[in-house]
Length: 278
Ligand SMILES: [Zn+2]
Ligand SMILES: [Zn+2]
Image (tube, rainbow, N blue to C red):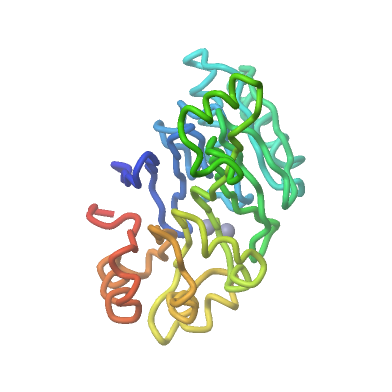
């Protein structure tokens, strides 16, 4: 399977996604992994791995990724996951180490909603709870950038230089929500985590479509295209990446439904894994 690559300005997302099959992404910068699917080779470069939940189409590949990283003598891996799955995850990896008679270099760092982790210069990941059938975390990627503090805007350059020479701090760090990954979630996410409407790049699952499946999103704690259409006016994102489509549907059918039901958003919507044989 050839992964898909999407670019949004300085941000690059590669990955693959199909519900109940294989779901993983790498986000550059800083090169971190969001879920590991069944264990793609492309994930071996990721020093930080953020697992959303324990369903195997998202988490099964972790021992393989850690094994590959040990094989290539790559540095220690940080594995972040919801608090509730940390213990069985540790046992799962330990069983793989025993089978391989190997020791992987990693640590499991359990997270709860609201926790923040530094993942690179000026980059932080923040966990948030989603609406799924097992404990699940989504992740925000925050980018901090230095800018002139509002008190000093409009001052001539020479004056700013003089102030700085006198030791006055004329800049401040402004954070912007660069990407939000909603993992697996039902429609309650829109009430629980409304900040997703304002992130530059929103990665959102869309498992179901079609009228005969309309109640399945709520029932199975996934999103149906109708749940997204109901909120169409609220998405302020520059780009929306839809992923996690059930294998029951064709990607072309999702694109056709997006064009029909969300014409105002259609140009900003990217579908994983559109344009591939998947
Ligand atoms: Zn899933
Ligand atoms: Zn799931």
